[in-house]
Image (tube, rainbow, N blue to C red; front, top):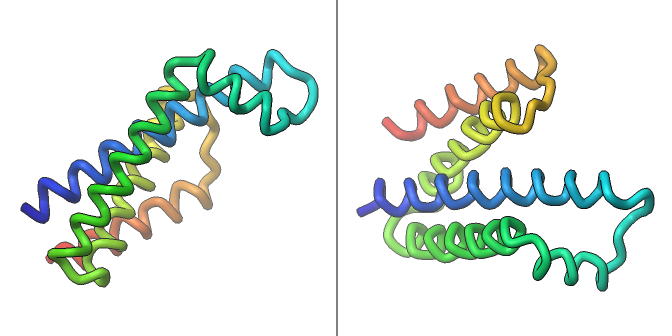
Length: 119
């Protein structure tokens, strides 16, 4: 059960973060100034993928709560950092973000830490 919950945490966190980033970048291109709270609320209802991002983040949050009910936090937090590795890779491939050598090395260090904790 812990691996299923961990998978849900990671997949929903990645989906939520990537969709949120994509949608807010699109919204930022259409606006030259910093959005206010009212504008952000309007964006949530106008941009369906932003709403999906919020739902995905909620799923991740509640799955994480379920995970820490059954597993030690010393496992749950480092293992859920797998989302950082996947998000970095997908940010490069899907969002076309550039990755510096330092960021790539940092991501590999996180991956090594996850592998150490998972064993």
